[in-house]
Image 1: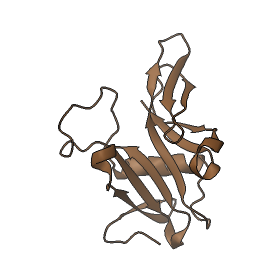
Image 2: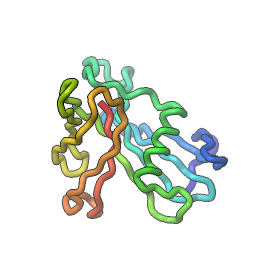
Image 3: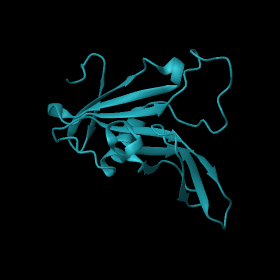
Length: 162
């Protein structure tokens, strides 16, 4: 089932017009939004879960200092599409939905030493640490290989932000 033209926006990448829309049903409770990208001709759909806080829905406390996810803009969606392709998403193939979770990681380390992005898998809650270069800017692509602990038995692809 494709996204309706009325409730989605077009984005053209490599001469192909994709449609995208944020799904905000559970945003107030989870502070997460799912961005759905539909390729032309009903190919393999992409669903990316992104941390996104709506200040009008949750005005009780200020966001954490590391909460630096930008608004969901066409440029951000383009970057999500590029990252998903590098993780193995094949938009023009027939197949089930390709799912990615964006995760907020904690960057630790100083110049001249090995730095790490610490994060927790959204499926199995396992903690991980990925090496990063000092001063490296997000996003960083990673995955949790504990597939036997995940629903569906597949590894979880993540895009890390810090």
